[in-house]
Image (cartoon, rainbow, N blue to C red; front, side, top):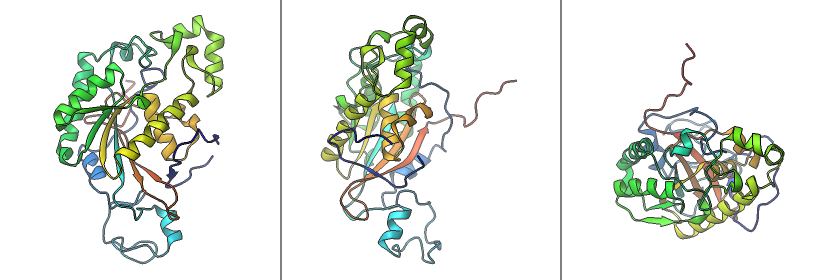
Length: 304
């Protein structure tokens, strides 16, 4: 397991599971029905990890609308904390850019900083329209300061009726000299450096940032968000690496888990953060939705 990334709030996952280029590495693996994002965001009373049924008997012989039998049971099944409503974070990955289409490394502010393509704008517009039914429940739209996320956030904020707040902690990893190159081009020019980066979370990509450095930065941004928007629902427009980092942190997975996630452009991921666990001494995190977008297919394209 990873060492503590720094002096940030430790978000306790609801359960403890056993032990990046711009493209996101792969096609989407999953989606939800178009209205499920509404259900996931608008049900703050549901304990993380619980099912959506209400008033049905549980394994402890009581209605799911009632209280849990013991504090220990609550900690095992999921905790909805006594400190008021959760902070719900709706993570939206930016739409595609010319770098995305050609699977080129594309970093943060130190990169070539490409903007959205026409296709990327259409993708984000579809995601914004998908979120519009819950506009009244959204308190803020936050974006990384990188061009493609700001352009995506402008579309979403206009649809939801908000101004944009900028959070530098949610910017993409800096890829240094690899920026703008494809994976094959990096392998051809910098094979030893690439091998070192793939072999260690502490090695900086092309002299830019390492995964661990990004983790520290992202979790610091999360701390600021939880302080300034406690109990609110916010949209955060970000990138592949920060979103995967937040997801791995919330579910209690090691940072290596970022290699095992796929994240589609303009996809929606929903995380909730509760004020305290059974002991009330640290935040609790829950993943409610991952890599969802309207019109996406669950299955990969046919090979025929």
